[in-house]
Structure formats: structure tokens, C-alpha cells
Length: 84
Image 1: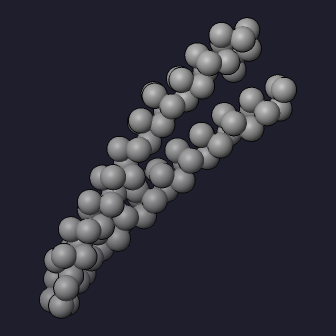
Image 2 (image 1 turned 90 degrees about the horizontal axis):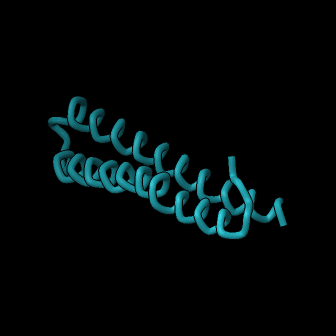
């Protein structure tokens, strides 16, 4: 049972890490496209799309940490299991 709880917690943490990495990737791509791709056709809409994706993935990280992970911790504490 304890292993199953830790696996569930690890899934949430790994999902948050994945969202953070994707956010950084999109932000890096957007900044690169904005600076290096100024004269390329379609660079401006692509840059905006990358910035939007970076914001979307970036906002998922605090939600996952402060909402989803806390919900799981509170759920486990109801059954007397401490996650710390």
C-alpha cells in the first residue's frame, strides 16, 4: 500500500517536472525565434505560439504543486499516512 501511494505521488511530481521542462523548451524556442528568425516567413505567429505554450505549461507547474499534490497529501493524511 505504501508503495502504491508513493508511485501516485511520483506520477504527480514527474508530471510537474515534465511541464516545467516543456515550458522552458517553448520559452527558449520562442526567444530564439524572436531574435534569430526576424526575417523568416511565419516567424511571428510561430513565436507567439511558442510563448503561449510556454505560459500554458508554466502555469501547470504551480497548479500541480499547490493544488494536486496538496490534495493527494490531504487524502493520504485522512488515512494516517504521512508523505514527508
